[in-house]
Length: 209
Image (cartoon, rainbow, N blue to C red; front, side):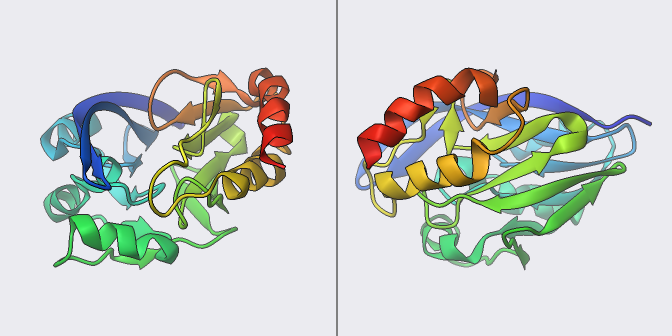
């Protein structure tokens, strides 16, 4: 069966540095009719389980550990038996949301994750958060960027644990090197492509350095 990328949008809140905001999150489900991984288990484990439709869940992958991207991860893992995977540099953020529950495994730069016959390669892209990662799936012409890159520019860097020059370096070195037709599927908002974002990103790069 052919692997695909499905989208579920869930709603909840993002809280950091004493503020709380209403947000809509993209939950990406990568797989076929038999098995899948979930990228960013946001807000509603039951809705994610419904969207899986009985498929075997192989992993719950966290692009970073802001609460709106991980708040449903433990419940989803408990319901399915799938491990929660997180880059270790984001453990301090994870512990703010789930102090009594550790992730089940670590993500590392260059690590392959295979599901439904396709491989997603972990790209460590710090800046929005220290342990932020993107997942590149060339067979699906896709990169799942979490909050590192959106349609229109880089993720926010105005709060704790973030750094603007660092996210600019990550985007320049890890994402702009991907083929221009690569679909960018972010943690919030619409899908774009590397080629469409490249001209705008050069302005951000110039601003960051």
